[in-house]
Amino acid sequence: MNNSEGTRMLAAERHALLLTRLARDGKLVAKDIATELHLSPDSIRRDLRELAAAGLCQRVYGGALPVSAAIADYATRAGIEVASKDQLAQAAVRLIDPGSTVILDGGTTNLAVARALPPDLFCTVITHSPTIASALLDHSGIEVIILGGRLFKHSAVTCGAAAMEAAQTISADLFLLGVAGVHASEGLTTGDVEEAAMKRALASRAAETYALASTEKVGAMSRFRILPFEQLAGIVTNHPAHDPTLLELQELGVAIINAAS
Image (cartoon, rainbow, N blue to C red; front, side, top):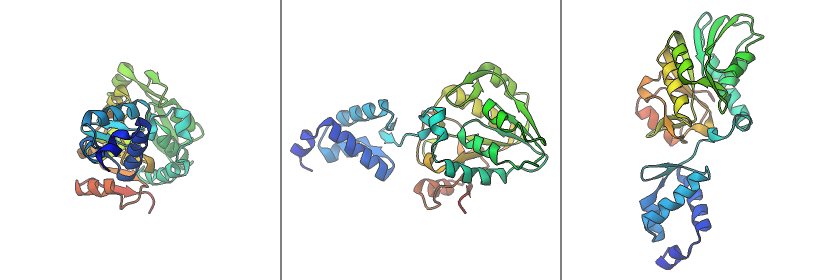
């Protein structure tokens, strides 16, 4: 593309190009795009700000990454990749030993886990999600402990000081962590700072933490980091095993449990 072609592009055309490249490559590097289009880096950064404001990408230093589908409201997320989450839930359930104590994080993926628990399972479930607690009403062998606090409606979980204090009184064998995004360089992320803090608090109370990442969350990110990969026992996902993000995570020593196999 020559200079005149780059400068004549309308903002809408640049936005469309940027989104196409983001979908193809999984990332955007502002200076590289600026060089290709013969535009200033400031022009590309402005485009990325506008796309991020519209919820179409997640800005990072030097460029942008795919935005997590988990920024949508709870009702919308409940209808995203339902079969994928159900498949993931079946693999996650196999991590729960009879008689153990497990913390179920909130969100639609862990709700699928709750619904997939065998009706004859005996265990203790600790959750800060009233939605997940209600899904276990008919499981007579499961003792349910709900952590109270301020209800964060986006994820249907409790957060805040009261919930954090309650988390310090529990201990568990396993924590199934819900995330908004999994990215090799940006880590495990979610969209709310208090929710991220609550997830860290819950992880600190479990012997092992597994992150659950349905396919649309791999390679995506949200605004706030949760945990370093070193604090995970592994990631349960049904994303294709040859995906660059998963291959890079394995090179970093992260255990990947493939729910699709």
